Figure 1: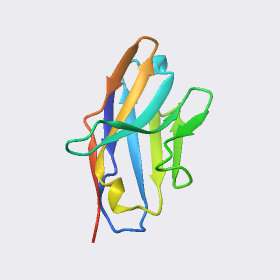
Figure 2: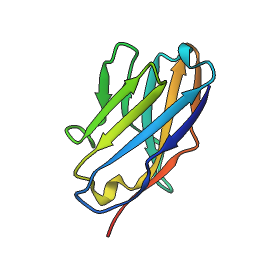
Figure 3: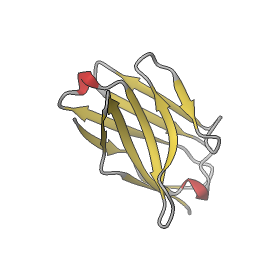
Length: 114
């Protein structure tokens, strides 16, 4: 499976954005999809996940500000983030699980600032 993220960029504090992750290859094998983020010197952290039944989970840091969704017909996952804060600045990575296998995207940088 190949994953390509898009939608990152510079966003003002309080603003919003939508990230997309397009999966290709054996995408039909994907069960769980998720977003992670990482800043320099810190561990990659979970942002949100969604399974193939549509059940979503969110990190406490984005609860109430994030919405994750997936379109299985397009093999695409989305993440909407609102009320962005400087602490949301990070490289955001798409992640998928396919049974015992997993795959990562190359990441897309989100910078929250003026």
